[in-house]
Amino acid sequence: MEASPIRIGRYELLERAAEGSLGVLYRGRDTVLGREVAVKVMAPGLLGDVAAHDRFFSEARAAARLQHVNIVTIFEFGEHEDTPYIVMEYLRGVSLADCLRSGPAMSLREKLDVAIQLCAGLEAAHTQGVVHRDVKPGNVWICQDGTVKLLDFGIATAASSSETFDVLGDPGYISPEQVTGKEVDSRTDIFSLGVVLYELMTRRRPFEGDSPTGIMLKIVNDNADPIVDAEVPPTLTAAIARAMEKTPAARFGRAADLGRELKAIKSRMPMPVDPATTPIDTTAMDLPPETPRVEEPVVTSRPVKSTPRNAPAQSQPVLLGIGLALVILLIVVWYFSRG
Image (cartoon, rainbow, N blue to C red; front, top):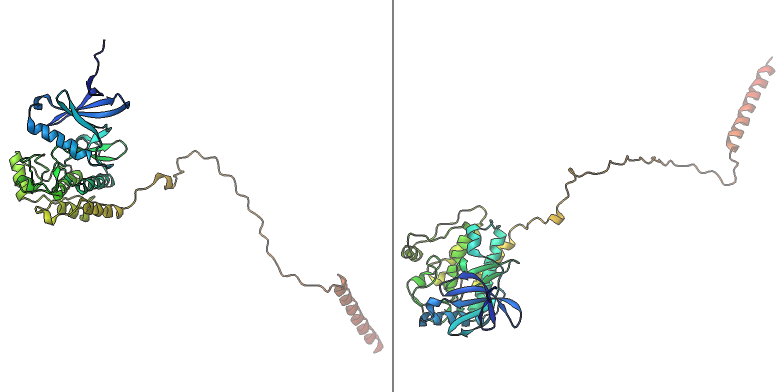
């Protein structure tokens, strides 16, 4: 007999989908509404950790207040038998991290589409006063229909808050102010997004080292190597470099500003060829023999002399003949009269 699915409240946990620092993500089913959902359950080893408990629900509260196509939708959060859980939309697709690691190469237009959607999601969060603080490829989901979703608001905080949770987030993507423990605002997400865009264009991180400490020192002190790729226009290279400026004031002021710059760059790109408008090559087609062409006769018009309406058709030649005969007769008469 098959074991019954594990239940969290009204949700059945069907299969384990992923695991993070705070909990385990399951593909589940809402038994009341009959829809597929994702259920994030706090890891058993953290159930007694008050700080982890607060961070877990910080994610739920931050994401639940955000309603945007480029942010994962939170349906419900609560506790079941002292186990915190979050229920959200179930996404089919692949993370940007997996795509960069082993996915097929993306065109520049596709990369810009991802970046523009991320800007839209971050702008929506920032407008609601939420700073994500952990923007990285692993927290970006590309759905099967091409929609990009921003995930995991576990260490998000209010834009006006000076709370730091120490130094959290992936060391390769955090901002200099996160490293140094300074107050953060929405521009810290713009720095992290610049790092993601750099990796999206080059498939390598701009700041690398042998240890997390070494990486963070480079983030604070070193500039990333310029992007050298004929496919990447200088305007895009400049936009990414501006997003990764060390001081927040030198970066784009808003995610929307970066998004507009990326849209302008995309609009200047040549449009992809539409197969529907491409001339059809008939050289390899099996066409019927060509039908011989029949030449039409060429008609050349000539001016036609008009004939008086009442004149007989042959009157002029007859009169000419009579006149000629009379002339001959007169010559003959004159000749014989001389003798």
